[in-house]
Length: 48
Image (tube, rainbow, N blue to C red):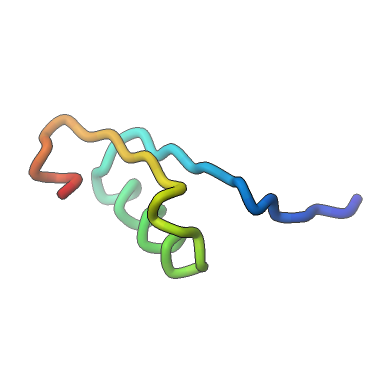
């Protein structure tokens, strides 16, 4: 099976706790543009 990366990929991270933050850092560090990421959190301060 061949897996390709779509140029229009969007990622949603539900919860910006320790694991969500690690997923976010890894995704952005791996080259995913920030505008293609949605993040939710209980408090606004956590996502800013």
